[in-house]
Length: 284
Image (cartoon, rainbow, N blue to C red; front, top):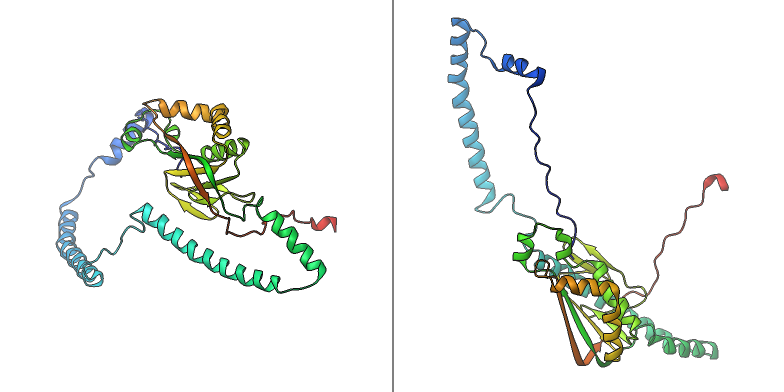
């Protein structure tokens, strides 16, 4: 995700000489030296210089031997897209593990018997669809948000934040789709539910703990006319689309009507996590 202001370093101010100029000249003026002091200084240089050169050469040899032809100080991450993909792959593995454990829990739960247990099973089944735990398929729309082209970003003299996609841009699209009666919404193929968090993380957007680089693909299943009306009437998105049409900004916006959109069931964690206030010791 991108975003964050690009701070410019302050220009170095020019300092006037003032009362300190004469003092600086005195400090930088060469002192008077006697013949014996000069000879002693030259003798130290004759001994010290070869020693320093030999020491540096020894360090170079040790470094070359230890490196074995590789860089001893490589950049930690040279490819942001590869880093994001690696973290996403790790998350997918963990998510599959969670899905396997959930399947075991569901199998054990289904094996329970009794009138009370069956009643709760029916209630859970009724709430799965509105909770986003059931896949939905149907006509809908696809909206793609992306940063401005690289040449526009590099040449801009204005606010660079306008050229980047931020979490509030994605949230505005998702909220407008809900207002338009969307039956299901996905971002980067991930089903959006009530516990979903969308936030910026460096140059990527983190969704349900997974970082995704731009462009950001947002899809919705629902009545296309109602969804379009909600998008076009949203004030925030109106401003975004005006900036997308401005050649000096050119932030990415693309909207496509889709005959079929597939929104998979949400398969992430379902537990709520929240903060609780600390009890003041003085209050007992």
